[in-house]
Length: 89
Image (spheres, rainbow, N blue to C red):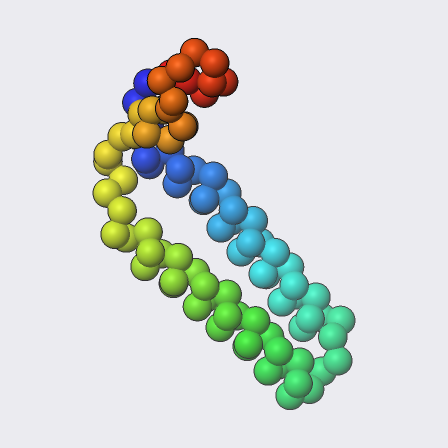
């Protein structure tokens, strides 16, 4: 059974969307209910910059992968060749 690698991008997109929603939720609450001052603004900026840094690092790492390739279950699961293994394919 061949599985295309681009399938792995679907859960990743959900995770990125969830963390972006969480980011904006936190920024809204820090700006709305937080103590107004330079410290709060600095905290929001550090939060946004660190999120963007991790996001760019992840995108950079994903750019080197050929997403059109496929993998088989034999490539992923351990194969012992015996019928006693629960993953023996």
